[in-house]
Amino acid sequence: MLTAINLACVRGDRRLFANLGFTLEPGGRLHVTGENGSGKTSLLRILCGLSPSETGEIRWQNEPVKHLGDEYRKSVLYLGHHNAIKEELTALENLRTAAALAGVAVDHAEGTELLGKVGLSGREDLPVRFLSQGQKRRVALSRLLWSTAPLWVLDEPFVALDTAAVAWLADIIGTHLSHGGMAVLTSHQEVAINSGIAQTLRIAS
Amino acid sequence: MKNTAAMNGAGPSEDIGTFGVLAAVVRRDLLLALRRKSEVMTALFFFVIVVSLFPLGIGPEMNLLRIIAPGVLWVAALLATMLSLNRLFAGDQADGTLEQMVLSPAPLGLLVIGKIVAHWLVTGLPLVLIAPVLGLQYDLSGRALAVLILSLLVGTPLLSLIGAIGAALTLGVRGGGVLLSLLTLPLYIPALIFGAGAVEADISGLGASGHLSLLAALLALACFFAPWATTAALRIALE
Image (cartoon, rainbow over all chains, first blue to last red; front, side, top):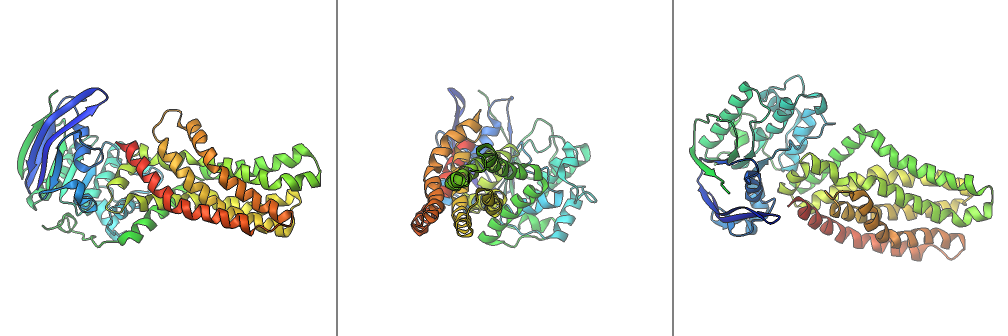
């Protein structure tokens, strides 16, 4: 269970949000909405521990995440605006390195199979810079397939994807939720995810 | 709770351990260096050219060349290392890999050590290997060349370690390249004094062991503090 209490974010001398709080139960998903620049990405970065909150705290299974350290980092998967992939490396090398960074071993055969699932079979050994934007995004999204983290923090996961991939991703998130996972996501698109308890959090300045 | 990897079919979920993560970072950076050869060669060619310019400019004054050799080789090594420093974390920050490294369950300090090791293997080690060839232009004796290699072997990891602190502190700063030089070069002075001093001491017959020991002591100190300082600087840069 993820609990956020009284979070606030200040950028420069502008207060983006304050007194923000929510509780996310296993199987729940939180849609964060708001205008451009309202602080959606800032909130997601605070949630996964990349930046500190001005006030309040975040609790994971009722423990403040500050005290949990790597135990919390093991439970969170963050997918930001950047794909976190290297243009010079192949899709397979990117996948295996990303998995290793998260402490998960993925061997050659498993990696190839996972890339097949994101629709990149036959392109595993191509340097990523030869792939299209959408395909690069798919390489980045492949981390959802090997991740063992129960909490997914996804910043605009549907950007640059075609309709088939959007449906696939919605399905993957749905399966994750139905197995007791949690997801926090921002999206400007209306996407049908068919499971889990949905909450919406609107950030208004 | 059932884990996500298992429910998606393939089951790659065994933990690879702390050492596995370190190895993965080093392997990735070496692979990247292999694919971007030009960037790697820049520092090495810079070193070769700067060192070779001095004998051409000064002329065949063997006594003078022997005296300036340790200083010239060491200053060139410092500058060549500087050239490659601003790319140490910049690429990882631009493509979001740095965020993933911070969020990795493995300690960030360990990943930073991996990056520094890879940086040394790519920029420091080639300088060490080519230095004796360049030293020949300065009419250094075999013994002096051996001391030169030894001093660079101990000194170049020190340059990578100190440089990593500067690279992390100037990450995301506009015009960071100049600031990086201003920040790092003063910190390189002890390495320069003891590194070049070791070769000079050996040439003048005083024995290089004192200087080399001090250089090694600095390296031990930096091994302990530099990853820690770099980690702190990276966290600030990402906030």
